[in-house]
Amino acid sequence: MKLLDLCPNFCSNHGKCDNGKCICEAGWQGPDCSEKICNCNNHGKCVDGRCICDEGFFGEDCSIQNKCPNDCCGNGTCEKGQCKCIKGFKNIDCCEQDCPNNCSAHGICKDWKCLCAKGWEGPDCSHKKCEKECLNGGICFDGSCHCKPGFKGKYCEEESCINDCSGHGACKNHTCVCEEDFFGIDCSMKCCKWNCHDKGSCDLTKGKCTCEIDFYGEFCQYQKCPNDCNQRGICLKEKGQCQCKDGWEGPDCSVKSCPNKCIFV
Image (cartoon, rainbow, N blue to C red; front, side, top):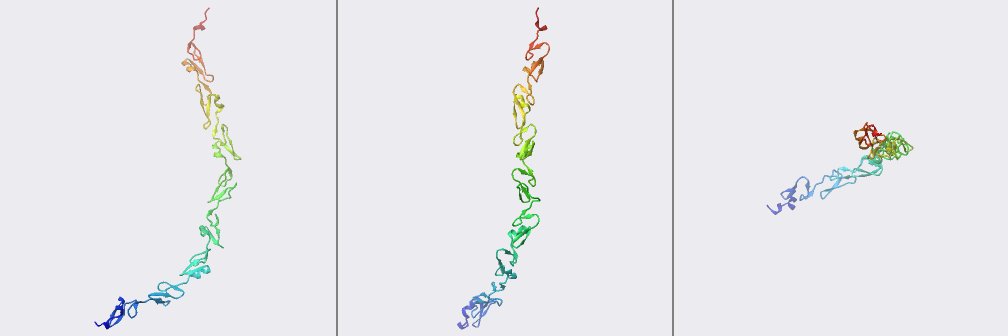
């Protein structure tokens, strides 16, 4: 092979040499096959193997036109074929007004304000309305009335008292009027009848008497007899005294009686 037969730059490894001329591979051109061919779709120029796109086109091959849907309706800028909406507008063409949280799917957006559907309220229609107005200063939240202290009920229409008077009284003007035998600000304490006859202590939570050692009964109304009358008499429990059988006597019927009362003549 003669040196004159050699091709420039050995065809840059992108072609074959034929009688001193390069026959380039597809996608390459130039005397030495060193220039990459660009397909700029007639919308740009190929420089150093890259497309320099004409104004209004972009992309590796200048195939994408820099045009946005509906020209962004005048409510945004077009960047590489996509709308960048200004505040207050949305959608791919910026033609739709934008309201807070898209009105939470419970209303429609008009003039940048939510017009809420029936049963919903709030700037973004996210709060569920109560069926009726909450009374006595109550606040509606998520469809339910939250009452101020001193009121209760679905719509805060009822007065309330502490602990609902424990079920032992009526609430009037926010004050418990207790049933008989009950007392306290919430009617939670129960009286012991007759104050345990002053012979015991009263458990006010239960209304039960704890009797002193010689007394018994629900209200400590009975008194024990000494030694249970030794089984020789009847205990009169209201008085705590023994009524002895014939032949016996003494406070506890422990003394045997003398015949005829031991009368000596």
